Image 1: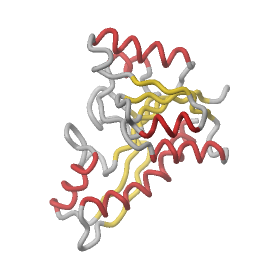
Image 2: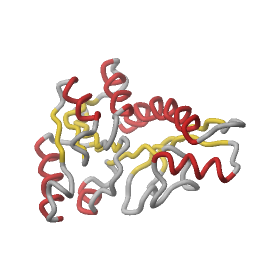
Image 3: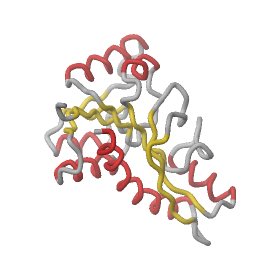
Image 4: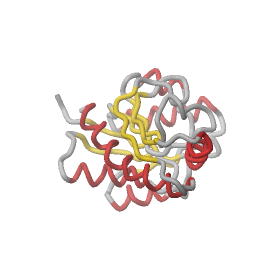
Length: 193
C-alpha cells in the first residue's frame, strides 16, 4: 500500500501539526503531510508548514463566501494532493458534509477532553477545560476520533487521561492536556496507517 498523503487542517498555532511533523521525521508513521489548510490566514500553523516545505492553503468562508465554492475549493485542494487522510489538529470549524462524506472513515480529529462527556457545539479550546474544572471531575484528557456529521461524535480511536489537580485553572489544565495530545495524535495516525 502506498504511504499516506495527509492533509492537516488547523486554525491556530499548530503545535499538534508540529508534533506530526516531528514524528514524521522520525518515521513514526508511513505517511507524508502534503498540505496544510487553515480557515485563518494568520494561523501560525501555516508558517510551520511553510518552514517544513509543505503546501499551505487559506480556505475560509470569508475568502469563499459562496458555500458551494468554499466546499469545491476544499475538495479540489485535497484531490490535488491525492489526500487519503485528513487530520483536524485544532481546526475550529465544522467540516462541510460533502467533505465528511467524500472522506468517510478517513478523517481524524484531536479533541482536548474525554469524549463523549465533553464534546459538542461550543466545546473547544479553553471552554472545554473550564467545563471540566467546573464539573469537579478529577480526570481529563485528550481524544482522537473519526469525524462524522456530528460535532465530536465519531468512533474513538485513542484516549489518554491526565489528572485535574487541586488549584488547576483552565490554562494549567490545557497545558497538561496538550502534552498528551502531542503524543496521541501521531500514534493515532500511525494506527490508521
